[in-house]
Length: 507
Image (cartoon, rainbow, N blue to C red; front, side, top):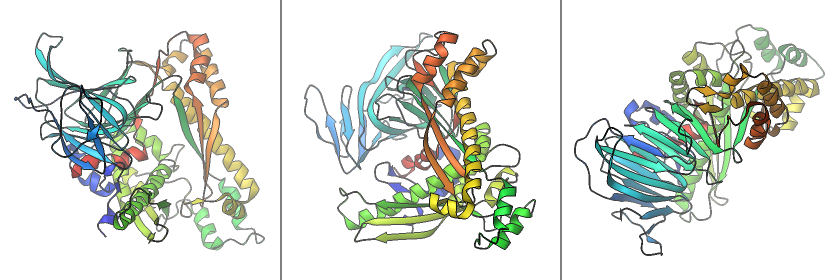
């Protein structure tokens, strides 16, 4: 049963459950990022400079080394050493754990490649003091790192073409997107300064429970999710219609008419079905992987919907999370209360099904805020189920509300584009209102990429637009202010980042 209470993804490494994760002390938390990042780190303490190479301490499944001048890859194993110019790569459903001095650890995740470019190479800092540089280049995939005790005169960097990030005595992760350039940086402890590569004036400080994205404009893809709630009057009329006999209609009607209905037994539900990959041949391992992956996906669905729950007033839980990293942390911690109400595995089909539920009462406990419309559980349903329960009028009205909300949120994301360390695109609207007109045009032309229906009548819609569309619209009216890279203002970490962020704790 303990295995079923922990989140474990072979591709990501061994992951702790969310509840285990956030119950740990702050100095034990791990940070997740996805994308290309260049990291500079120096520790808060430590006087002795290590001369040891980067050491492989664990290999799960397959990892290989490349040691110039040779051109052939060879199997990596615990005890393998990486020196300057050496490379390490992992294959599908594999990972490798590394260390640079015992307190400083890394995990190279599946389908990733890392190169040691410099290892304790002496150089002079801007103030003339001697420093020792260790440069690691992430060529593809993802890496997690925890720098607990780098020597005080040591700077560690991870490089990519997309970004430069500086950290101090913290833990972090980075991942190279499929386009080989996009960078996502997420933080749960400390502060990471992220800079666009080749643009020293363009950088942001990413704080605890936040993330940022960096990408060349031609590869940037901005997405925003909007949520719509069905009009209360329409719901009441629907439930009161004898021609539409709905289950528990009378009890639900009483909830709707109550200004502050009880949150008791009201949950956000998430369910996932997962098939174990064929490369996992061991039956017990395949079962464990599928169950943990299904739990991960169900929990991710809960967090993503939690962010879109509408509070009293006109904001969502996600809005609060973006505004207050501490509350963001508390809310994500509370998702550890989500329990598995269904956990099944079919050995013949190698398929796991997991359903989890998160009590909405936890939202009010953490935030002290009421929820706008709370009358039944919130779980994804098919379009057919939604139409049968709510009808065409409720659906059309709610879809319009979700689309308008998505438009607004996408505009906010575009306005949050970082121009330099002190300025976002929104700041330029004061100087040139043509920018606002240009952004509105981009937003109206955004593509709808998904639409999700829920049992409580709410609907989520995701819109996206490409970076080139933004650049082409803004440049004619504002000049070359956007630079070569898109960089987002820091916002709350994603559900995927949050669930993945604690892999190093089991090293």
